[in-house]
Amino acid sequence: MTGVRPATSSSGTGRTSGERPGSLRRALLSALRSFVVIGLLITAYAVAPWDRPTHVSALWRLVVWLVLVVIAVAWQVRAVMRSPHPWVRAVEGAGIGVALLLVPFAAVYAGLSAADPATFTQPLTRLDAFYFTVTVFATVGFGDIAPVTEQARLLVTAQMLADLVLIGTIVKVLAGAAQRRRESLGPRVRPRDRTP
Image (cartoon, rainbow, N blue to C red; front, side):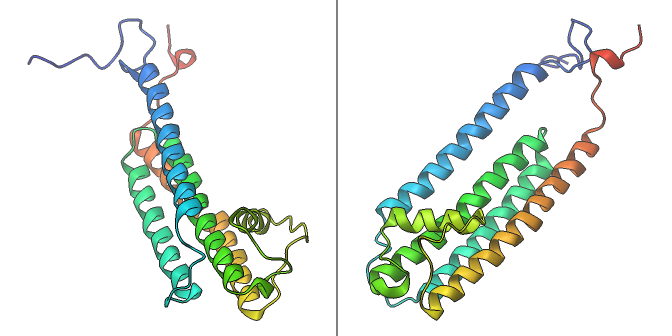
């Protein structure tokens, strides 16, 4: 059989060949993938015509985004269950999940404010809308921007509930998937665990 490498390295550490360099490389690739996806989402938020009038209501746009979030999280859970480094993949999934939740709410808030500047206590630019979305997500609520209309309050309430679901459920699902995958891969032998 040509092309088959031994399972352990010649250094006798008990690690599989390529585990150390492969782990670092996978972690860096995961971080790069996360930055690219989050960067694309923020770019789409910055340049897309969210504040133009449309025949689709803000609520329906938000529902479509939330369906996309659920699909993305399901895809991330699947990726975690197949990954040789499930915790790295779970962290990536959580980061992307947060971005997928923040951007659509910010877009909806910017659109509502553009359609009716009295929707919030002050008219919102895209940056203001993103700032407001993050303050709601972080539950700090500085108070400088607040929803005024019932529609805006309903959407902010929906965001608060979605944030709780994200923090309480999505992260737990990703962590559980990572733990199950880690257990299915079996224990890793560390140098201090070896017997002489």
